[in-house]
Amino acid sequence: MMTRSPRYGRKLDDFEVGATYPHPWEVTIDAGTVALFQASFLDATPTYASAAFARQLGLRDRPIHPLLLMNLGLSFSVHDVSEQAIAHLAYLDIRFPHACFAGDTVTASSRVLGVKPTSAGDKGVVHVRTIVDNQDGLTVCAFERKALVRAGALEGRPEAPFSHAQPDAGALQRAPVELDRLSGPPSRRGGFAGFFDDFTEGDVIGHHVGKTVGDSEHMQLTLLMRNSHPLHFDEGYCREGSSFTGTRVVYGGLVFGFVASLASRDVTGNVLWDLGYDDGAHPSGVAAGDTLYAASKVLSTRPRNAHTGEVTFRLVGLKNERPEAVLEAGGDLFAPELGKSREARIASKVFEISRTVLMLRRPG
Image 1: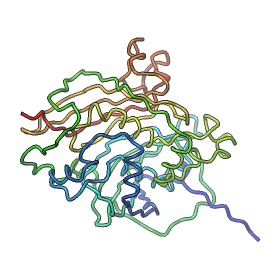
Image 2: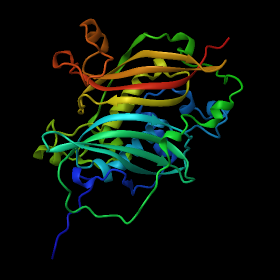
Image 3: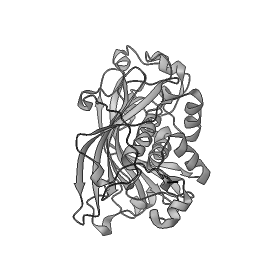
Image 4: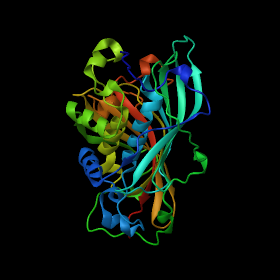
């Protein structure tokens, strides 16, 4: 009797520029998933939390949080793209063109944009674009990412007999068309501080509350998202030398979500939509027991109309060190770690990205 041991993902030689992989996951996002996501991230953005508020914007219900969609798309792609990867390197051009709602079914595909071996030849960087569509073929999330992948070819990977074509990602809008039809500001009985008019280029906000990541918590959320990389939930795999920490590593999409939510009460309590994220990276990893902190810097502001404006923040996350301590020590907290000298790097930084949001102007 022959025993088979299927393996998934790809090594460097398995990637072909221009190839598109339709990922096998097909998931209906039910209300329970939405509730668990909302309960796991301290997000203050009213559009994603309140059906009544979302309907005032012209949406039929509260939409699925964009970072839930991004996490699902990123996780779906692991099966075909990065289950053999060493590390996730970068996020690029994340956008959310259409609203997605509880009850919708989502699928994803990834197109290979680039493959670049390192000079040592033992690994390389793979660049893919992932598109998440709903059951009607509307794209609800699109992003590019780069992963560090081992050289060689993977043995034992079953080939699925499917083909797929992606839409032109450059033509995708950055927000649902309903938001362009907004004739007046939505009304609320209460709400958070921080409107468009309150932010000025160069402002720095140190978000006070931290978040300690729990062991079972991060594994449960990883599996909820269908992330199949054993680095995040298989302790035996990690102890065999496949983890740079010797133990399970918190999946990067969750670190992204935790850091964004730590900033939320200070910067997104009056946001209508996430217009996009770009130039993101994980300079170092996070393990269970680490405490995350966040800080934001206003990169630019741009009035959009009488009711809204766009604000771009540089969002950073740190582990086990408050951002104020880094700034007081003279650290260049908001500059990308890639390209810094070894002496200038911030060892505690675990996440960085630029984030553009559509924000309400101050009433009256």
